[in-house]
Each structure stands twice: as C-alpha cells, then as structure tokens.
Length: 548
Image (cartoon, rainbow, N blue to C red):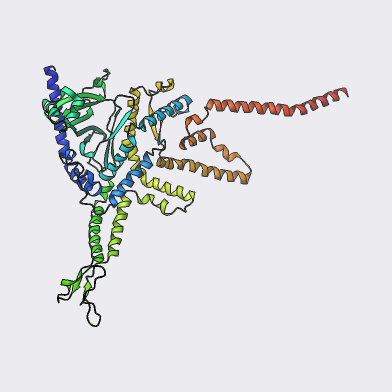
C-alpha cells in the first residue's frame, strides 16, 4: 500500500472510531432507559446495551425483575398486530405504480409494474431471504424501544435479497438537516476465526494470531455507512455511489475494506419521535410506570396469597404451638378451650380481590398502549354483523393511521427503494417499456395493507352511497339524467385499483373501445334489419300509389 493510501486509511479508521465514541456518549440516557425496559419486557436483552453485552455469558437467566408477564405478552401481540396491519405475509401489501398517473393508463406500463411487484415479493419472501422473522423482530424493537433497524443487502453468492434485524444495542445513527437518517454505524462482535474468513490478511496481526491460538475469541468491528463527500458521479464503482461504506477493526483502528451503496442499506424506523431527539420513543416507555407498578403489585399479591393458603398462626403463649402439627389429619390437643373456643387462629391478611382489581387496572393500561385492546372487540363480540365489523375496522384505521403512516414513510418506503436497487443491479427486473424509460422510471409506492385499504375504501363507499341516492331520484322521477354526472370510464378502473384488482385482470382501454365499437355496429345492423320490412312496405305502397 502506498504511503498516501495508508495515511488515508488510517485517517478513515480513526474518524470512524471517533464518531462511534461521540454517538455512544450522546445516547447514554437512552441506553439506561432501554435497559430498564428490557429487564421487565425482554429480559434476554437486558445486558445488550452495556459494553461487552454481546459477548457476555450466553444463556444466563435474566428475568429476576419480572413477576408478571403481561407486558412481555403484550409486546408479542403488538408485533403481530403491526405485522398483520402493515406487512401481512399472505397478501400483496403494496403496489409499485408510475408517479405520472397518465402513464398508469398505458397497459404495458401497468403490466411492467405489476411484474416488478411480483418479482419483489417473490425474492422478499423466499426461504433464504429471512424477511418474515427479521421483520417481526423489528416490530418488537419498535414496541419495546421505539426504534428498529433492518439491514438489507445482496444475497451472498446468488441473486436475491438478505434481511437482518440489527439490535439497537449495536446500531448508532444520526440525521441530516432534513431529519432523514443518513449516517448509520454498527458496532458488532465477530470471533477471530469469522474475521479471518471475512477479511483475511488485511486484519491486524493480533487478530490473525488469535485465530490460530484461540479462534473463538471475539473482537469488535465497525460498519459505518454515511454520505460520500468525495463522490464522483462519472465513476461506475463505489466512488460514484451516494453512500460510503467502511469496515474498521477496533483492534488497532484498522480500515479493513471500503465500498459503497447507491441506497441506504439500513432502513431505520421510529415509533414516535420527540423534538430534539433522533431515537424513537415506544409504547413500553409510555407505560413503564404501569409495568413497574404491576410487578410490585404481583409480588404483594403473591405474598398475601401464600399467607392465605399457608396462614401465619396466632396462639396464646402457653406452649401449644411448640408441638403443633400442620400435617394433614393431625390432631392437636389443646388447640381449643373446654367450651370449644379456638386458641389458635390464622393471622388476618389483606383483601386479595382488591389487589387483583388494581392489577387489572394496570394490565388494561399496558394492553391499551400495545394496541391489544383495540383488537379485542372483535373477539369479545363475535355476534356483530358484517357492517358493524367494517365500522369497527374503520375506527381502528382512524386511531392507528398516524402510527402506521410513519412506518410506511420511514421504514417500508426506504426498504422498498433498497430492494429495487438490489434487484435492478442483479438484472432481475424485466426491461422497461419505452414510455417509462422516457419518464426515467419514476415510481411511487401505494400500500395495499388491510389498514391502507380500509382507509381508501372510504372513497368507494362514498361513491356507492352517492349512486344509491341518485338511483332513488331516478326511480322517483323516471328520469335517468342524474346518472349522467358520473364518469364511469374513470370510476370503474379507479375502484378496481382501490380494491386491489390486478392489472392483468382488466382489459386494455383500446380493447374496450373496440368492443364498444363492435356493439355499436352490431346494434346499427340490427336496427337496419328490423327497419327493412317497414322500408319494403313503404316502397311497395309508394309503387302502388304511382300505378294508381
């Protein structure tokens, strides 16, 4: 390596290490908060926000703070709720469409986007991609800590996409001037053997020696992705990409490799964000007092329940208790007086029923924060009509729209952009139609998740209510003109789009025009045929009149 290049590499490595130190110190308050939540909601994570937490004792018990599992169960349900609302794996929960709505009228363009969407879902949910499980972990991180991170990258050695949820304990990030996350630093451990497999001879000599002597000893490394300041758009290699990528060994502060990305490979999602903060806040943070209170209440109720089942005995100090037996079927002489009055009595305990009521109050608060309460109504009242179910669903959509909207904008949107970038580079996408090439392939994402569809269905419902009113007027007045206000050639395609009808199921507008023209010509011929006898009779009558 040339002296100039070596100096540049050392400078990059030192800068990455310095950025980690600054970013780590800046979030110390958050880490103590996250640790407190983890101890009571996800105990397996309780040490992952501490230095060396990822290399500590594996498999140790960490649930000493948990007496009641309501919050842990509610978090699992929260992640399932978000998954079913945002990314249901048994549905096509988004579509890719042209940004220019005029292009949407072209059948070839619609079919191209539909095929791209199909290919994207095929690779996303392939067995090797691992999206479903990692996405679930991301939603759990949102519920517990308010922040989640997914790493989206090429599949190693073959076409495809690979997903990995990165635990918040190893992810540090910052925003640009527009509040968009543009710098991500991952601090993660690898064994010496794994490091040699990945980087080989560029590793510091210490790690390479350890790989021979103690191959499973772990070292920490950095992966830093940030905007490239020396970008040359004319270059086709990583120097021309929007984001620079650096792998650095903490041992010896050594730059191991440099690369780049055209799109951000770390989609970051936040549940809600407070002014002046870059990390999110979570439902668990909102109800942490309730979680703590519930655990203390559970401890108290357990003690009282133990005392009730195995009571403390009160007796007069005359030596009776010394020989008192608690064995089933035992006879204790002297336990009552000659007139039958008990000389040994249990100690009165508190009202356990009140304790259970207090615990139920805290459980309701926790379940409400994790969205569980919103979804219990359908289970608790199964006798609801279909209309009532639809109305309940619409109400949930109104309540959840702000939360879900943020995830679509901040997490799913950048993730889809990254996925399309990977598949395009791998040559997995079909050739663009000429019209789309002229538009530079500009696209938009339209979400078709159950919640999004319920929100958009209001447009179709409003139309149907309006049409029903118009039909009533037509029936009363026997005048069909009120229906002339509706442009059915626009309404039907857009309603089909709202309802998620695939483009390949719809006829091309040109075919529809040909069908209409054919019907019109057929109707004209039929009219001519039907009018022929009358015309012949008129001609015959005219001829007879001329003869007369």
